[in-house]
Image (cartoon, rainbow over all chains, first blue to last red; front, top):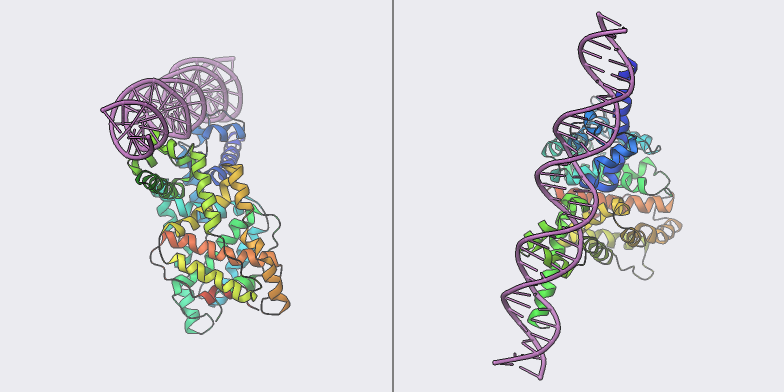
Length: 190
Length: 190
DNA sequence: TTATATATTAAGCGACTGCTCAACATATGT
DNA sequence: ACATATGTTGAGCAGTCGCTTAATATATAA
């Protein structure tokens, strides 16, 4: 990779990183491309050399979020092992206030108001419904008696909501210790 | 109350109601006072007869949210009874997609990005930290052995995060049944 | 070195924003 | 009926927005 291409990719990531923070703090419409450019130390026009529009910047983040926040669905794992891995994976990225942990908050916000921003982003998120994708594991666990009875989707949504909700709180507060993974699993366990 | 005053209060509530929906969907900066006025069937100027600014409208909603979403802390209740009442109260308002249930989502968003909007709103929310206020109940429950061990604040935050997170998901999806209250309490129970 | 492609800037356009204000309509109190 | 206070409008102001574009600097390839 040439020097030029290297700087290109670096700038692109830098813009995404700054945008992520701004989108969380000020929302899509409150985020100004001028401010992002200023913070990145480039002219406002150059922004549009890297991303054709503010919307494309937002959608790029949603796409990255969909990729990064997907869990590799283990092949035919035991249900409780599957959900335990989910929690462990979350706790691992939550310990560092990095790109991924801010992405968690961003995606939570996007799930609520992407419809008011971009139909494409809304559909990406909808197609990436981790709670719905985990329903089979819930059902399997209920059959074997290790997961409590009740509507599987609702149970799954509650499990991921608790992770999502805690992640949102975590970014705002620094007086929080990390929960034990058993606390999350208690929602599911029979 | 005269006919005039009656209409005044009605309009004021109507504006708040429309604003609530817009703030959730488009965020503070994406919400236009003109659009709110249009949806309320009044001129854009009249908006500012009822609320002196868009910010005051936002802060009014935060203030209402702080009032409505506060639970009457029962005097010396048993810890598990206290948290059970919290869940029951949430489930009661979650069953209707009304003002209160949208307010739930609004306050969740406000907790994240009020700092980027209004210092006053941010402090109102901070002063209304239900999770922190519930810590004594957690500690009491841990002493009597009915609540699991672990950092009390973290435990409390996780409990309320699960409620908050589920409420946020509930407004977006209509294919969800309501969880059993035991599912939430399982997070706390020893 | 020269030619070509890319990086970068800054000015500026049209649209939209929150909000004000002079003007007019309506309702209330006497 | 008249006076006064309140309700209501819509044009308009100053500012910001996303984005374009002509011009220029810089890096790469020949």
